[in-house]
Image (cartoon, rainbow, N blue to C red; front, side):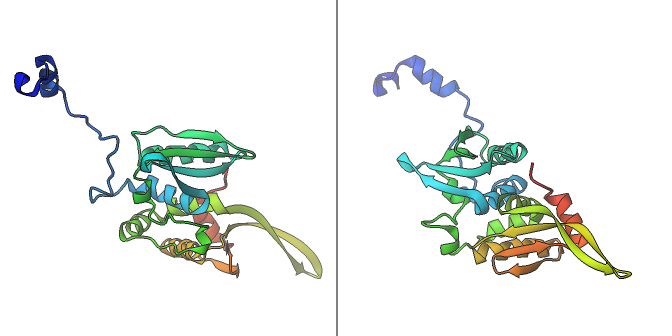
Length: 227
């Protein structure tokens, strides 16, 4: 074989004895009719729908970018951890911009994981989940909501006044707000809240509020304030 192929015997022995790589760095579970880890992916999907995007580069390699405000270092760490869990064989970078950090990862198969990718802003195109994506959100609705609310939502202290015994008193209470111009993404947020039986209302067409005590307590367990 060495003479026939004009390859040294040492090289042939190396090919014969070398152990196969345990992980294919370019391996894609979607292309292999599988799916990524449910928890990290549900979280990353929510982040992508809020503050994420895919950018094509050379040789059909895409950059996944998730923008995070500098004020929330724990959120930045969580974004990086979820990206690493979904694609553990590639490095994750942090790119400082004015007022925010982009958490970036390069891979040819990011479009397989986020088929919602397309031209133009998300609110100007259809955003529909595939069957395997819906299955993952059904399994992990809390982590999906964590990604959504930590991108385009917040936990705030609201207040109201009430007259008690003739005296006007002010009451403060926490609530969660989620804002998005995409009707499709808003519907996904509503659906995930319904999966957890969390009551919500729509004060505006692009704004969702969770203010009832039991709903706020549930989101505190699954989402919590950004930090």
